[in-house]
Length: 341
Ligand SMILES: O=C(O)CCC(=O)C(=O)O
Ligand SMILES: [Fe+2]
Image (cartoon, rainbow, N blue to C red; front, side, top):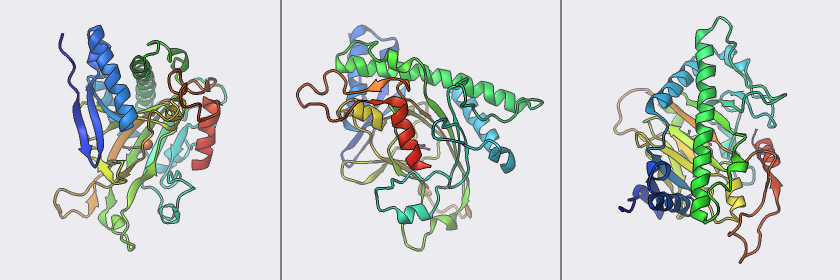
């Protein structure tokens, strides 16, 4: 029986992000499944990030999501403004340029805060949660809006399944029951976020103070795992153990998956929630154009079911003690979102 082979997607400044063929987990032999689970857990324990190939989501599904996202962001600004993000509790709706500032308040971020992130986004939560409506463009008489809603709801479900599989891999890697997390992931209290970094004049990125202009400031994610779908442009950077930012270059057909703060806490800090940011990728050569082209990405932020209390996982605290109090998943997220918006 062949051992699985794990490639390296990124290897720079002590940051090694594995490229993992997930089909060996989804449909491999028991031994291949166990080895893949180990590789997934190991990636989250060392880099906090992995790249996943053969993850089971068809390329056509992903391109349809990107096409529908681009069409949404091309709508007139007043249509998008009518769908505004309305509360941290719901975390649903549209955020225009500069609304969210992810740079952390406890850092010296006066300079960052003065320059809003150059991006807009739409957050889509679990449909049908009472009092927390998703903000859809009105579908009546608007075929694009109807298709948009249908596409995004289906994708929300598809990504929920992948989150469940990834948490099964983490469980198997940790030596606990493969289904251990299922009761924490089956509700799907997750947020699908469509992101558009608009094309901008190159002069915007030439700042007087010589600092690098970022598209999305340095931050870590809040929940359990984030599934990140990026287009071919690049710009995502991950903080290395040396403190440098390393390019997480897009690899066609892969999803970048990173662990969030709540999973780090849940694992008693044996899993890492690694900081990352989005910058304007340096042009390969100066192409003479005045504008940088736009970038689109889709992030699916996964959370443990909001009603669940999160405290140190079996196997992570017996020798060292628990570093954190238990906290309800939903309360933790609202606390973090309240600090950001
Ligand atoms: O757009 C990206 O590639 C990353 C976005 C991100 O890190 C986030 O929204 O949390
Ligand atoms: Fe992020």
